[in-house]
Structures are given as structure tokens and as C-alpha cells.
Amino acid sequence: MNEKVINVGIADDHSLFREGIRLIIDDYENTQLTLEAENGQDLLTKLQNNTPDVILLDLEMPKMDGVETLRYLTENSIYPDLKIIVLTMHKEARMIAYLMELGANGYLMKDAEPREFEEAIRTVYEEGHYFNESVSQAMLKSLKDKSGKVPTLKNNYQLTSREMEVLQLIAKGLTTSEIGEKLFLSKRTIEGHRKNLISKLGARNTATLIVKAVKEGLISVDF
Image (cartoon, rainbow, N blue to C red):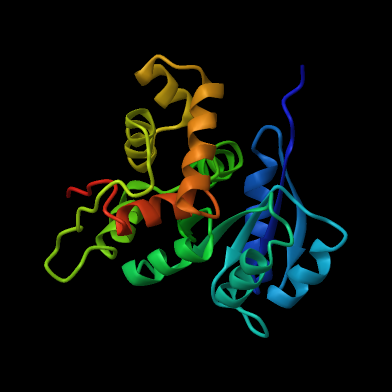
């Protein structure tokens, strides 16, 4: 059976950058660039007739920037299956955390290597989120209180011990397959736990699940 082709879109006001992304994606297997937009308004218009699986969204654009576009897409839940990877040249921890809370599925530096773009696109498509190590640390550090510690709360969400175990492994960046192998469970079972966690914590997706779990003190963060 043929592997499904991942359709990718990009919103960036620099045509040379968009062309560079097109050339990079052309080299990936089972991945194609199917939508290009110059800004947020242009993206929203084109999404009405063409909805890719993954959007690469630049933060700094005229008319409608990436933050405004992300907020509009996630708050209105117009395209619930659309995965959004934010692109930027900035790595400010508070901004990263804010974007994850808004519902971004990943955060990627624009000067990342082509192989990381491919990894990010595939991971977001398959797992629902992507954070490289440096971005994960910046995001989680920003969620700590002023004392540098994450408060520990009671398990008011009524999570099972297995769900807590899965949650901690998700936060460490393990894929569904890796978690399944570690816990000797099937991918289907792990996906079931993931969906239950998202539902119980009232998260939009896996990315916001991690953010909320850290803020609520359900998982520990050590650096």
C-alpha cells in the first residue's frame, strides 16, 4: 500500500524563502508543497479551496501576521485537522510558550537544516506536535514560576497511573511508537491514552496538552 502524500502549505511574505522551501520539499518522499501565501489574509483566502495537512506559518508578515493568523485558526476551529508549524528567527521563551498555548503544533527556526524541516513536517503530521530539544527547554522553562519551580498539584483531573506515565513520555518527546515499545503497548492503545489525556485536560491538541500539564504541575520539568 502506498504511503499517503503529506500536503504542505507555507505562509511567508518573502518569495525567495517560499521558493527555497519548495525546492527542499521537492526532495522529500511522499511530501509536496500545495499552497503558498504571502500573508495571513492570503492564507485564509486560499485555505477555503485548498486545505493542506501541514502549514508552515511565518510570524512576521504584513497585513495579518502569524500570531493573529494562528489565533484566528485555532480559536475558530475552522480546520480542526490542520497542523501548524510556526517559523521564525526568534527564540524567545515566553513567545514560544504563548504560541503553543494558542494551539501551534510546532515551532521551528527558519535557519534549520532541511532534514529538520522534514522531521518537523512528518512528526507534526503523524504525532500532532514537534519540538526540538532547545525549543522544548525554552518553552517549559518559561512556564516555571519566579522561584524556578513548577508547583505540584493534586491529581484533580483523575488521571490513571498509566495515563500519567504516557503523559510524561509525551513531554519527553517520544513518539507514539517509542512510547508503545517502552510500555509494551500497541500504538492504538497509546493513541487512546493520548486522546483521553487531551479530553480530560481540555487541551486543543498534543502541544497544548504538554503546556497545560506543566502549568498544572502534573509533570515535572528538570533541566
